[in-house]
Image (cartoon, rainbow, N blue to C red; front, side, top):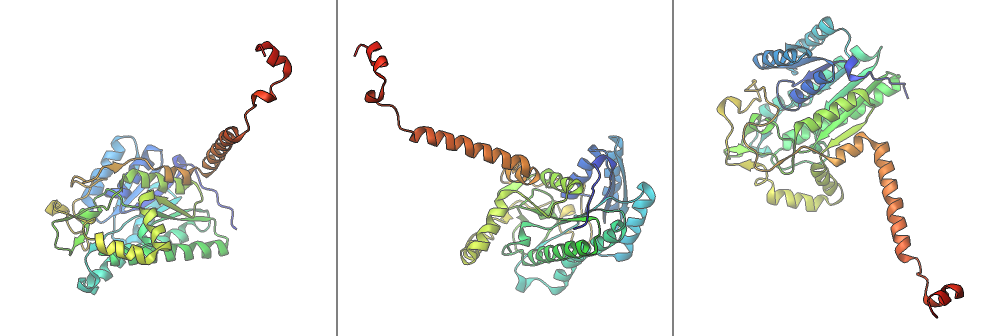
Length: 357
């Protein structure tokens, strides 16, 4: 296994695709706050200029390139520009993604191909460019999968398929780089339902006014924390949010029951009567309104800003110690309850005399 040394965030140059909204934007902001040099990539040049101006205004080191992850030449040029501005890259985050909602039989092959160009081939292109850049000096590649990398949800069949593919590619890339002895950490981040503009940006073929995150919904900054942790720690997978993970576990152990559950509630938990703003809807083929971490459509359910499940993954040693301590305390309490209590007849004679017996 190759020796991998990852720098502190304050010493890193990080390239992030899909950085003009949602998880990518949250990650860029948090990385700048930690002192990293951040290079943002997306299709939306106007939003990127505003975001970079904001980050620089706060003292951050940031720059950007307008590029579609479906365009190989544009992505190679973006990588070259990042190194020209900030020097060698240390971490590459493949976050760009889009979605479409609808039954597979009513979704055109053209739309499905376009989604794969972004969600799958965008990850492939970015990862291979990053691997070439990092092979000699080392670093981290972080790919954004989904809890749907493990369990398909109805009405998001194409998206789920693309995330299954991202997981397979990421696992294969990790093994191949290890075989070569390349000092590159490869991490797959698997978010549960995250409250971003993802649903606003998705192509909607369900006939409902709008789309929503199935509950429970989590804050995008939780995913950003996981991503930046992977920039500095060698991790295989990080799951964000136990809610989605529970569905994946259910699907793994009770697949038929999970199918029936999805069929019964799949439409209701993914649709809403709240339509997105027209300027933000449907970015499958072209960029739409960006610049926010969260959806502008008020969420139906509260957004969770903490996740003990995530903390346990980011701090496994401390978690194990706490669990072990808890087990010892619980064991001591149980033992105390089960221990035989001294009876009157077991009391020493001297003590009995003092008590007047």
